[in-house]
Length: 295
Image 1: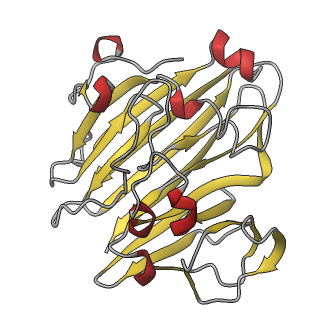
Image 2 (image 1 turned 90 degrees about the vertical axis):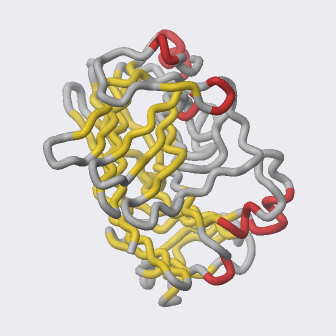
């Protein structure tokens, strides 16, 4: 499974693919109001989001990220599918984030919003890892102050399929010590750093004070990432869990594709299905979304 080149892209589009970092194909979509997003066909990976108006970048991508067919991009919005982390026999976070996706369409709709839809269909390579027939689509819609990313999975096989996964969103912050996630109070979580499970969040705001890796079960649909001067509202649908992650200074130092201070400029707030796999019956679809709004 390798990343597509521009010549391999299928489907008509108003926005045409171009060569990005490492020669990988990407498509840049711009709404009528100037809102902009960038999506690589390698992994259906969103690497940039600039809302209309201030145009400030809201996603974090590591300066040391590898852009190569055999590597996952560090930052932006990696897609974890059909496995979250190492919760199974598949490669870390599944195969979708290093697969070559096809661009189905990329254009402005009647409202002026810019939309890109990428597609991944099962193949001999995916079935060798995960024996299921499926069609996955990642949709990216940008307009005004909002970015919506949607994942849909259609079961095209004769047996039920189950998966875990996430939209592993890296949100850019000026200083992680001044940022906080609001809205998780009362939600129960698994803390991978402490090795605990089932504790209820007691804090009104979640701050990063060291390595942080938590899965919040049945998390609220609406959260906010707040820092001095700006807020990102985070709305999730279809995904039951939320992951909040930052490697901290110590964890970041051990990551070859993250610059030394990279941990201080990002917080991952991920729409996820981790605790209980999502089951899709034959012939049926599933869809989940994460909508980000800059305030």
